[in-house]
Image (cartoon, rainbow, N blue to C red; front, side):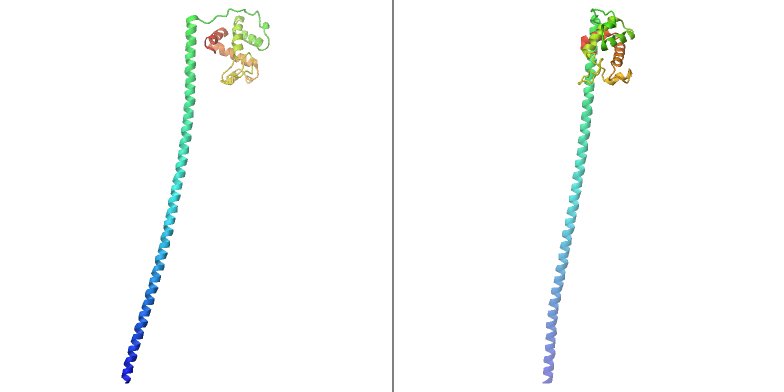
Length: 229
């Protein structure tokens, strides 16, 4: 009888240990599953964070590339505008030079064909017949070596150009003063007071006429032919 109970006790103990082992195994298996799920979740979170960081880096790279492209395009546009402006200015200068050359040639042919238009008007007896800037101009013209017969031509020329007004300014061309020097500061070679002194302007104008045309009457003839001198 004792042996029977002993056997039954052993069996009960074995069954208990088996149940306990199974229970523990289930618990351990569940614990491993939980741990594995936790690790997988952490890996997913880390992957998402890495993907977001990579996405932000790519967006930053794209934004930087766009900004660089915009700056380059703006620089290219500014350079192109400057080149167009310079080309237009050069074209205007060349056009003006061509027009002046054609007018010079036209005037030269006219003079060669018929000669300069001689002045046939009344010759003044002296410079005292004039006053103001015209009187000064007459006296300076004599000092330059021209005869009184040249003054009527000079008088007509500068009446047409400026009305003998030492402040006369051509707003379209920038020509200035009694002789309408272009630009006006050319007259500085005759004196630093070229803006306000009629005598300085007249002195420069007579030198210009003498060097380019020879006499006031030839300058006046040229002006009649082409409209300028």
